[in-house]
Image (tube, rainbow, N blue to C red; front, side, top):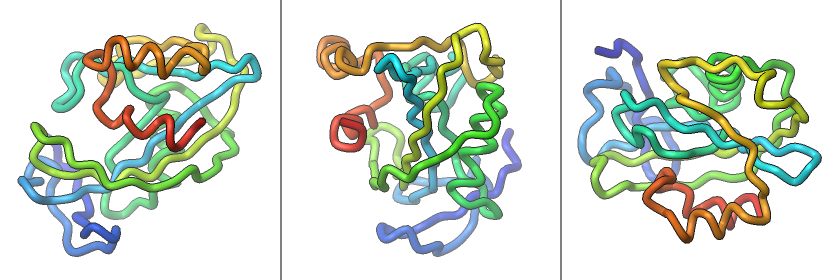
Length: 167
């Protein structure tokens, strides 16, 4: 049971209340920060979400992501998540955009704020948090959209925004 307190926002990302993460209900919108990580070889780092995750269990998603707690900023959250999930520190972040996403089977919405960064670390230089991440892999960016089109069921539903945000 999570004791995290998250901000509940409206469709304009204005805070309208706070709730325990486990009390988020249908119709609520929570904040989520997302990290898109690329390297100089034209590859994107993807992570496979832990099989125990409440949403998106086992699916491939961006390098790191996290629900923003009520006391955090989007940027502060993604810095924390990158360190916790991947062992990454000292990233230079660039804001890539913001999107409201309502997943039909999750019941609540997510206000995503997307960040990008670059690193040339090899896979063995990352330290994964097993409770969050099963595995990571570098994927050629020029093939990723084709991979998602062929097997959309293996990616997080919000992957539909990747083309618009990162290409």
